[in-house]
Length: 278
Image 1 (tube, rainbow, N blue to C red):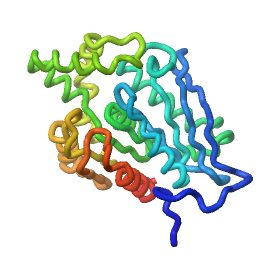
Image 2: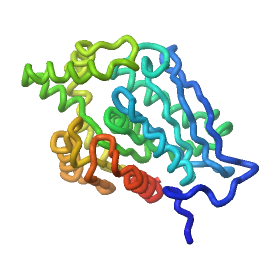
Image 3: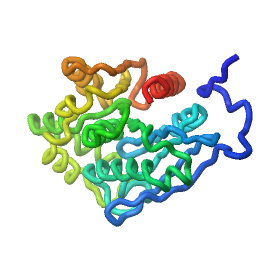
Image 4: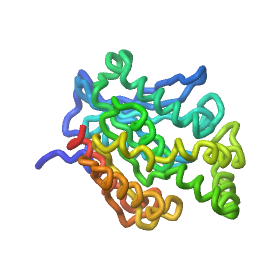
């Protein structure tokens, strides 16, 4: 029977190039970012995935990292500035800058030599806020070959709703306030002002023309009450299809924002898409 990295451990251990867990420290604008690199076994060079967590990072998708590593991918998970012990202060602008810093690190000579990473095959895969960061970063960096957004939010659309409805601002501030514990230097009022200030630049619907020529994966949860697929997933799918996207894959799973009952299904979707696209 064929080896299934989603449900099986590797059949043999490569004694020369075993799978390992590496602590890495990234740097952006003078601050440090705490990271963990799941290094696949084998001499490589390996394709790599930068797995971006959401706001504020309570679900970090470590199970996806393990499954993708078993599938032959190096996987980097890191914490943005001001989150979960990384240096600096948290804001959404820093999330985007830190994502670019992580991408450039994975393309560096250090990543190639120390971690056997292929600099030309690096995917951005993000959940929730991380999905938004993945799409915007891919739009800004043409060298990103493939990008995936899992239950991705669109802060441009969210900010438009806040601007149109004063009650929406109060709801948004309460939502953000509930998630600030692992974040340093941020407050809800500041974060809402930030998305309002950048709402045109941070709207993924405005980035369609920069994404249509690359493989894009969009996954949403039918019962997601945090990031409604009707507000965020379906409009982006429609915009990409209308824009002529030739390599778009999109899925709606019977699950919630964290895909709590569809973790294996999610892992298989992402791994199969990476194998086909990257």
